[in-house]
Amino acid sequence: MKLPPQETRKGPSLVLVGIDFRHAPLELRERISLSGRDEIDDAIGRVLSHRSVEEAYLLSTCNRTEVYALPRNEEEAYRAVVDEVFDTRAPGVERQGRLYVRWHEEAAEHLLSVACGLESMVLGEPEILGQVKQAAELAVFHKAAGPVLKRLLKTAQDSGRRARSETELSVGAVSFGYASVELARNIFSHLETTRVLLIGAGEIARQVARNLRERGAKELVVANRSAERAESLLLEFPGAQLVPFDDRVRHLAQADLAVVSTSADQPVITRAHVEEATARRGDRPLLLVDLSVPRNVA
Image (cartoon, rainbow, N blue to C red; front, side, top):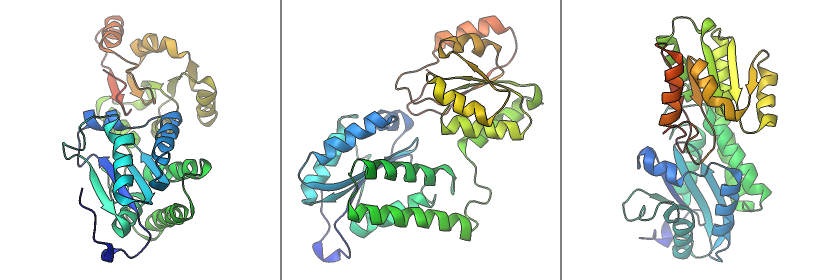
């Protein structure tokens, strides 16, 4: 690893190590993706256990996993981040040249660009700012973000909000949830009579449900491991039905459109599940969309 010349630094020392859709295929990104709070807590804790790292911030979405660290020793901090977050989940990823590294002001500028939606697969997509904010709250809660990263994260969130309110960047931008519903509209002539199964009840499921309701969908069935979270989703969408997670295959057989968006690290819909469902449904078409990372349909 080549460190930047000291004289180029304009602000506090900072290192970013990341992987995204531009540098790695989905099958590699999903191995590195940290999908649950416990996984993120553990990764941040391991990075901060190294004396070379003073502050840390971890952002993990479906299209990127990035770690920003304030180092006491640059080379050792870089090594700690790679070893504890990336190589431990995908051995050899550094040797494969899949990681990107930014130093100092370039690392800070990259985070601002991410928050503004400029680094997204869908330019200006709306979810990323909320994801940056949630990850920032977690870093502050665990005291992983200190004065330097707190200031940077506030600047990034302010920049993201301004990019959306003062420019036309987000005009016409779409989310993956929106794109899924548009795909369904191309297949099913009337969403009003389309039976929809949502497996998962997080923010992505909420966006899908919102887009479906705006386009007339009435029959929404939600299957989620956490009944409390699913009930929260149902409060926003009266008339939606909550079913036990273990009954998902039975309801898959009855659905026209199924959208899977859980944080499970193993598939929740398998080939055997699909074969069982299709055997029950006859010739009716089924659109099955997996918006999970790692993939939940296999």
